[in-house]
Amino acid sequence: MKETTQTIIVTGGAGYIGSHTIIELLTTTDFNVVSIDNFSNSTPASYDRIKKIANRSFESLNFDLCNEAELNGQLSNIKNIAGIIHFAAYKSVPESMTNPLLYYHNNLTSLNNLLKFALKQNIKNFIFSSSCSVYGNADKLPVTEETELKKAESPYGHTKQIGEDIIRFVCRSELNTVILRYFNPVGAHTSGQIGEFPLNRPNNLVPIITQAAVGKNSLTVFGDKFDTRDGSCIRDYIHVSDIANAHVKALNYLIDKKNKSNTPVFNLGTGDGVSVLEAIKSFEKVSGKKLNYTIGPPREGDVVAVYADNTLARNELSWQPKFGLDDMMASAWKWQQTLEAGN
Ligand code: WQD
Picture (spheres, rainbow, N blue to C red):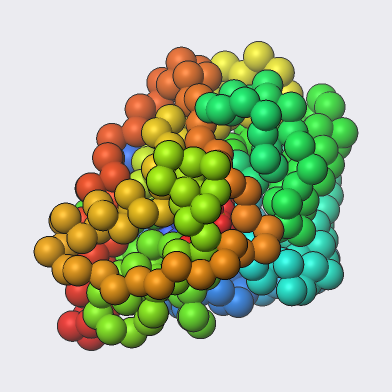
């Protein structure tokens, strides 16, 4: 008799990384998917795009994870939950600097409510969306998962540090969790039919670059006097579909009980540090567009440089980033052109 198909809950499933991960789940696994999103930083239109690309449907629920009563009411009757992938969180460094309590409330209350639910429902597998910002200004680069975490430079990064600690203390035995530290997710699905869709003016570099290329935004480089090879900040940009692929690998890693501890941590980066000016040059090369930008003062909350040693994820998860910087920029540009064409 066919085994009852199991369900994966994806919080923040209408968002940038969540939507790409649902596509990966629907196209490479048999899991049913239930997405939870309150559309605070996304739109339900993402769901139609996902279904069209994946040629498969899924369920979705619209509520705020900070509302514990609603969370329990909406999720308690879902059966056969094999795991939870928790993306839903605010993620802008500058916004967290101007509104720290919004970040501490939203990112931590939603996590606490969800963990309580997972423990009560005896859900065994939980994937937490963490970030390279937990490293702060690390003493040594590239950072490995063992690199000492410095003081967080922003409330956003601090909520991810606290979130990881909550998980470590909560998931001693009952819950198997993988903590994934994303570096800088950029780019868009190769179909050009879904990508980053900032509702307001974006804060992240790449959507600002693609909007500047179509005259919808101005581009300022936040500082060019840092102690780096060209004076601009260095990051490890990684294609959002490589991040999505890593989530399916991490899920299978837990379901197949390959984890050697309750809360393994993995860096999801390419291992290549790229400066802001180099990212701009890559975009200009692949798009054929010349970007006019100004040099402005450093942005509060930024770390100077961070990029990954991704050996552990390669070995433990058998994960391999497939896209290079030019591919990332080309896919971001293709998506911006889709948006410009009104598709
Ligand atoms: C990148 C660099 C800016 C805008 C990210 C996100 C999120 C998280 C990791 C996972 C910085 C510079 C930016 C602009 C610029 N990952 N910049 N002009 O700050 O690394 O934050 O942390 O959750 O991806 O929160 O990403 O894209 O904002 O900035 O010069 O208009 O580009 O100073 O050096 P950041 P970002």
